[in-house]
Image (tube, rainbow, N blue to C red; front, top):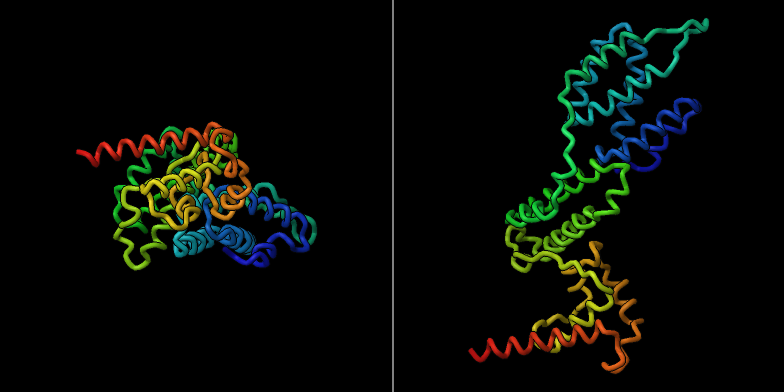
Length: 298
């Protein structure tokens, strides 16, 4: 990510018209999720607006240089289309004049840009029904190499956000992006556990985060009961929860959970006066004990 000063210089010039156009480009580029470095489209837009204008009599030569530099930077077709479309739009909407006030035509530049745009492969936008988190998770879990799994999930999250850019109603409705983010965080945690053995999943093998649908303050109490019953041996229950649980599709932060859990007044109440959820957790653990006893007797 470029330093803020490097970004701001593009839309804080003495030319207010230019500032408005550059700021508009910045907003659209940020929203598109196409560029990890937002300075890239601003750089090409600013540089080649100047070059195309100054060498408007030789637009083919400028275009060859333009494409060569974008390819050198390894920009995708979609990124190239984004930049060229904004340049063509700018030249169409802007009136250039000479010292005598006579209008300068840039039709040849616009034509060359539009011709080159037509040659690029059309951008393949993923259909909404192709975003199936469960299928993506299954595919990811088949990847034994953790960095490969991480890159796959990050790519799918980026594609999902790109498809729904500006349509926050969809994103908020299904919370799919939160599910991807939670799984990405889980894989990143696994990489921290095995920094020198990224291909050995060990503790992370076959584990996917549990999405808790009730009050997240109940999770520490459940872990406490499981520890007491001998089903778990977790000294740091809050770190364990942060690693293995999400709450209604959203990541859980151990600091927030610990603070909220300590404030929960039901912990100091007698079981007969505690909320029904507490009673249900106790009953569930008791049933687990009974099942374990049966299995031990076999």
